[in-house]
Amino acid sequence: MLVITMTFWGGNFTATKYAITHGVHPLAYSSSRYTIAAIIFFGLSRVFEGSVRIARNDFGVLALCAVGLVANQVCFIYALRYTSTASAALLFGTMPIFAALISFFAGIERPTRRFAIAAVVSLVGVVFVAVGTNGSLSSNLKGDALTMVAVITWAFYSVMATPMMTRYSPIRLSAYAFGCTSLVMLAIATPQLKTQTLHLSHTVWATYSFAVVLSLVFANVLWFRSIKIIGPSRASLFSNLQFFLAALFGVLLLSEKITVLQVLGGVTIGVAILLSRPRGSKLAPVESVE
Image 1 (cartoon, one colour):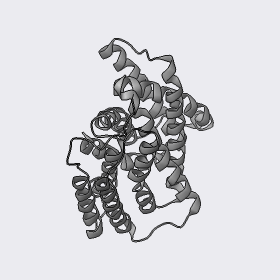
Image 2 (spheres, helix red, strand yellow):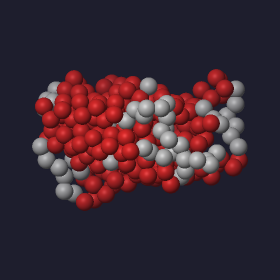
Image 3 (cartoon, one colour):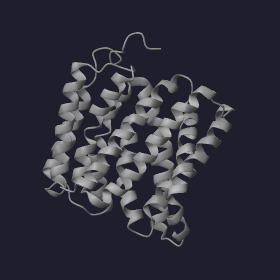
Image 4 (cartoon, one colour):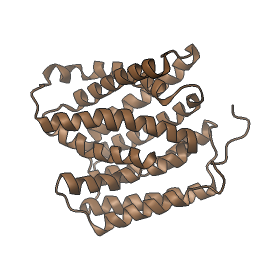
């Protein structure tokens, strides 16, 4: 499930890059994606689960998740304007580390020494992919800072939503998280939405549909189902695959070239994922956590 998720997320880099450079405003793009995705999730929850209800005491956690998602989307979409893809890939490679730290302090799981080694190996793989992308890294502090906020907020969202997976399906959880996020995003994106034209090419609409249905809706269901099985820390190691897969999509769809370093990086990340597999079935949980 995680490999499929990373394939769609890797393709989303190409789709997003194409859309926002061919007539779609960044915030209009993000806000409308989340709004449509929220509507789809509410519909799926109603049809397949027969209810969209959640407990009142869970709204506080969902609000925190929404804050994380809003910050993630705004920072990520604008980080790409100021920093290079190589730097973004490198900084996102630190996500497993932040996910592990947040998981530990939240009392959700205790990452093992084996995971710590795998996280370092994975980061080395991301360095290879990043440097192999264009041979240089950005020194733009604004772009790099925005990227780091995007990294931390996505790790925060993934970890905070994990305990609720025992009570709700990924569909219902995403419906509320995305619904809350879309309300804030629509308010922020209002100026861009007013000037956004709908007269776009068929290719733009195709990439936009991919970004909504497969990358946002389907992939997020798989992401949280996977987190429920193996935990947010180890699942986050797989997220580093998306940059290598994004490079492959660049070769297939944008006629870009792939370098030896990028291939080596992809192999290294794969080794890290295999290395992260615990001897038991799960990462060691923190005791006395309900």
